[in-house]
Amino acid sequence: MPEDNKAALEKIRCRIDEIDDTILRLLKERLACAKEIGLLKSRDNRAKWDPLRERQIYDRLRRDNKDDFPNDALVSIFHEIITTCRLSQKTTEVAFLGPEATFSHLAAVKYFGQTADYRAIETIEDIFIDVERGRVDYGIVPLENSIEGSVTSTLDSFMKCKVRICGEELLPISHNLVNFSGNMEDIKTVVSHSQPLAQCREWLKKHLPGIPCQSVFSTGVAAQMAAKDASVAAIASSLAIKTYQLQIVTKGIEDYSGNTTRFVLIGKESPSASGRDKTSLLVGLLDKPGALNDTLTILARRNINLTRIESRPVKAEPGKYLFFIDMLGHMEDGVIQEACERLQESSSYFEWLGSYPLARESTADA
Image 1 (tube, helix red, strand yellow):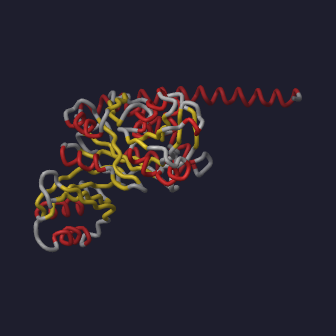
Image 2 (tube, one colour):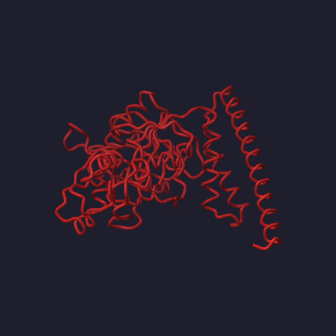
Image 3 (tube, rainbow, N blue to C red):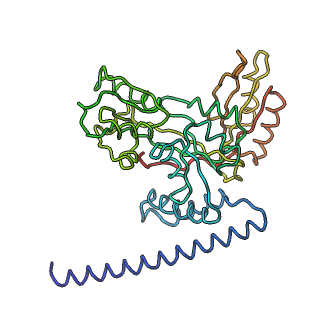
């Protein structure tokens, strides 16, 4: 390299070092400001998390950026900064469906960043119980998948435990077939959670005909089994490959593209309105003709956008169902509050599961 180019390169590198030092100094200053805000909020007994304030920050950054810096990367960087600063105000314990490296673990890290105290829990119902009893601050659980539909164990747990939905996260799902050797001919059994097995059903039938599939509690458990037994292959996340030192047999074995799982964050209290929110309800209908139509009419007359409705049977009460309802808006909005009051009057059972910010648009690959 010519001497002039070397000198120019060294000058630019020095400038980058100066910029990095400035960024580091400002990050420390931002963290100190966040801690000071935490102290002031504690004195006033105010919630540490302000979704509206966070949304305003992201909107301002996108506006001022003017696409000079890649927008997705910008949001990802500031999400980690904002979350780290918020969590510095109080250590946050988050439960996820374990062991490590499950898609639930990935969703939790995506939502909270690297700073939270994560706890792997064996079952979805146990996550609900730990949140309800105050053993952890939050839990993150899968609610529905774009291909296979709802996760029934999550829906049933909402019917058993008194918790609030505090947020949601959309996680694009890419399934990897992994084992100890990386060779397909070594595979005698395929293990995973029931949802990934279903999402890869056709691929497995075509490429591994006659190989039995076994459902286990989570993709993390499947990865552990594959790490211990060379004849076992797991359908698992990219994080599991690194965590359990496995080899990739085939990437992206899901039957359909656009596979996305919606996770919800559960806690004791829902956050205040952010301006782009969703409200979830659990409703039981009166035993009369047209009861479901009456419920939907209450929402339609108020121009409330219903985004999801699904029924689940009430255990030990044959013929009785509860309906899970998602709609756009926050309980602090007058029209949502009015509609919920009317629903409560006209229902056999009514429970507000929570109001929370809509998931940020997701581009990361799982």
